[in-house]
Image 1 (cartoon, rainbow, N blue to C red):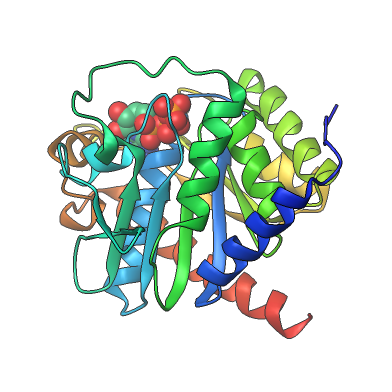
Image 2 (cartoon, protein in one colour):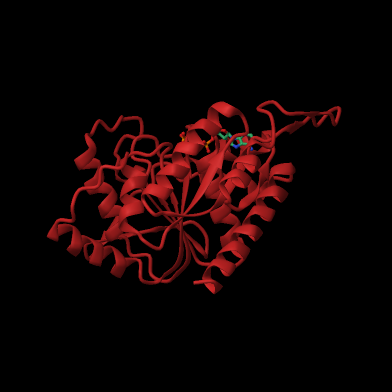
Length: 278
Ligand SMILES: Nc1ncnc2c1ncn2[C@@H]1O[C@H](COP(=O)(O)OP(=O)(O)OP(=O)(O)O)[C@@H](O)[C@H]1O
């Protein structure tokens, strides 16, 4: 059930502000998942890094208020937030990648955020409306798992946004993904496609493949729902290492890197054909 309140005049002004601030952004993608821990932030961060390495201007916005991971995955823990003329200045990670995460506002990153919905929504709206992104080819939004205030705010306030849904292949994750897909339908959030993460593991010592969380569930779900399948990423210890070091998958040479490169290619292809068919 989607509980959408009637639009308040204040909302209209806020919406205008959001579209003004995002007017220089070509594509906005929200990375979502039904279940926690399926690798949504890892995928979002690495897709952003790979796009930026290809020369695209990329913004990465972490709207996971309770468990932000983007700063850690990029090795940026403790980065301060810079505000100039009341506009949040994104942190420059490389020539083409700029990042904003709520973590930058916290003095102590280990302090839990204990807020109710309206306060949280105010912060998310501020992260959408007050960041000085400038011109971007891609804005990638990393949302927390599930269908709460954070993805709902983006779905309602950023009409040009498209969802990229991450899942692992086993039924317990797919059951929650179906909720995410229904959420997209009910909020009219366009879906760019599904990514299946942690899809099989090839033992580096003996070369035998083990489908630890099964395989193919994300692809099958995409087929059943008539949604694009963007690709599979295997379990790769290099991904964990890159995440813990904050270095990004770009610096690894395991099997996940080539799969992510292929996924980035499909994301671009699908966006191009979506734009042509507009
Ligand atoms: N393909 C993979 N192979 C191995 N480990 C992975 C893979 N994808 C993600 N991981 C690891 O799984 C853990 C969880 O990943 P991540 O934080 O990206 O998940 P999430 O879905 O964003 O979680 P949250 O519920 O906090 O939003 C991390 O330690 C990450 O390194």
